[in-house]
Image 1 (tube, helix red, strand yellow):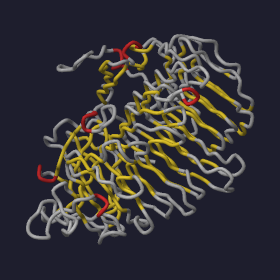
Image 2 (spheres, rainbow, N blue to C red; image 1 turned 90 degrees about the vertical axis):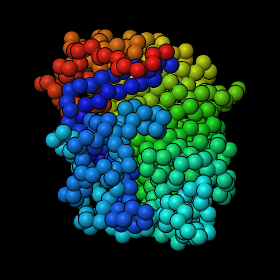
Image 3 (tube, helix red, strand yellow; image 1 turned 180 degrees about the vertical axis):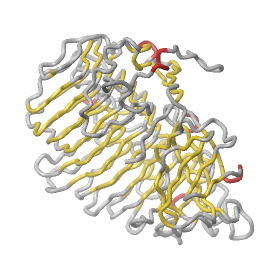
Length: 579
């Protein structure tokens, strides 16, 4: 998992159509969470001599402008403005979720080869490190003004045959000189040309990367590359071995699936989907980001920092769907990490028996006999304003860890025949599910079902463990029907009677800073402060905004750790429009 350190941030949430500030001023230490590329060449950007791949990093407390701050790569400090394409970029308009900050810089020829660390120094304070590998590779470009007969190695046309390509799909090993380890940067514009099989970009055999040498597709630094107009799927893998692919910083406007795997009995692993802005108008048994729909092992998917919004679909449609295929024994979807994403404002377009609307994050291996989803990590996600489930686990899920997630106003459809829920587990979850320090709030939604729901969970084995969570239900209540080994310890249940499996719990108002504005930080007199368990399997070391845990003698309950600065009322920044 990526580095997780102490942070401070001003966080803006959209709640019930309003722009809401959530300020955290506990620390000014910069933090790095993740990068788009994990390896790349230090030369090859032909119009910038001495420069190589452009790398984007996301974090907090990086500053809105560089000033004297700098990025360091392998001990080489980048102190010139020309080393950067952007610094401290934020906001939904840039495809960035919930106040995360982005820096994009170029590798340079003086950096050492091999394994290095990336860090940021802001006003004399150093962030933690992100690992990176400097290795050989080529750099190519795509532009709406390009030509597929060009060399592709120049971002602008510099002579006959020397300029960018026209189509993104030209940058594939099966259709050009593009090889494992190569990177293509896609310039600003809207790309709507169909590639293959109703997709804007579809991977076939030999179209992918290799261990240590992924193929990478990224929006050009500081430019807006839009893939699609809602007519076709976005990026799909089709029936072939397809591994080691990175997709970064696109605005994807797809019909059904934005990024996903097709069927096929070959390995499909090591995909990295980072920093994209995604919207779809899907329906049916599929999802916006779909992995694990093939009768093969699929491993090591990283889904980081995506802004997923305004999805339309029915009850069978999910924003993120992780699963395995029924009746294929011994299959695994293993090593999936879903983090720092923002999912919000989905619309139910289903009718009759399909009504219910899209879900958020859904882990559902459909082979209950042998296939499993194993080593699943879901953390630091913000999920709200959904007609159906915010987060759900189903069937053979094993070793799943979920922490620091915030879910509110989910399950707000009015179709009562389809269960609506903020967090749910159903259909024989196998073993070892850990649900720690999450905050789930029911904002008097119109749905008629449960805030926390266990449906047909007759085969729960070896612990579903819930600790330090806040479950706040004004209307829905808490389902009390699980059959199996479910343990709730040091949770806070408020607004409805606690379920029968709850132990050592609180039943008091958690005293959020401002519920009406979706500010779920704790007040100084909150009963949740210092009331949690510190026995959390070594997983939870910080809170939703990066504050280290614990700040007091014990962990706090919920996604936020109280600090003294939380006692200061937040100020609305100038220029903020409140609707």
